[in-house]
Image 1 (cartoon, helix red, strand yellow):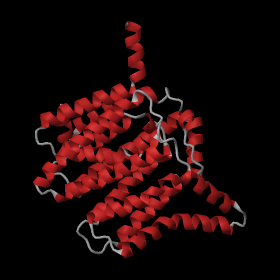
Image 2 (spheres, rainbow, N blue to C red):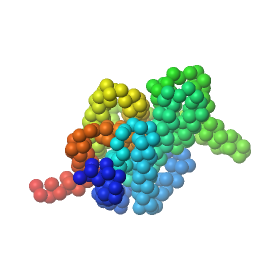
Image 3 (cartoon, rainbow, N blue to C red):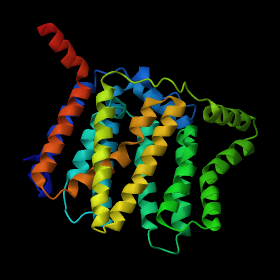
Image 4 (spheres, rainbow, N blue to C red):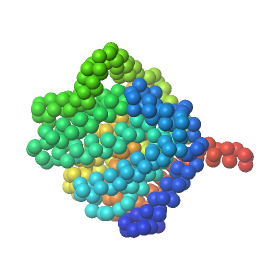
Length: 339
């Protein structure tokens, strides 16, 4: 039923999305103390977001949900524009909402959630370079967006490496492209430093120290703060990625080169985010920044499954597992009370 409603691009698909949205978000808008897990960044944007999470949790949750919905629509348009699938379906929007809804870090506004949205634009511009020779404008744009994300959280500095690897996986990467990515990446930081220096105080020196400290301070590599219930999310995401990666082999055999190239780029982004999360011991980075590539990977996989009953079983399984992840405490307490 769900797959049928989503594939038909009718009102039933929208109603299905709204029902699942309520199921994932309704019980957590007022039940989570966001101030305890607010951003620890030192950027102005992160400080504003932390204040919002502490003072108006409902507004924060609403803004986070709107961000996720817009992102889902963006994924839908991305798949259609890039001809990654021959099927028109609301599945990308739906997959984005349930995967994002399956982890607490997306139930409130935070810099990682904002970064994940801009990551979609980065992926879009990189994929656009496929089989094109004149790509300097796209290279500069994607590096400029990455530089902006660096100002959101200085630990996202590794995105410059992701650009090099990602672009190199789609085209021959010339020395000129390397130079343009560096220029684009440091442009936002250059203007920020210029503004602080012109203002006439020593704030820029403090900013420099904060950036260096933020980038070089790593967490304990032996521990990653993960709640018990979030292992369900991680296990589900890992299994889905394995299925999607296996599906890539079939797509490659069918010579759907664009879909394969896009999926390889997504895997590069996911792997880079995962490594950074373990280095900095940051579970929010692991899950939230990976929402876009994971959702897009799953959307490409599920939309291209020709046997729709199989796709339906997979979607129902994802919904069930992620609902258990979100309501793990309530379910555990209910079982213990019965026991």
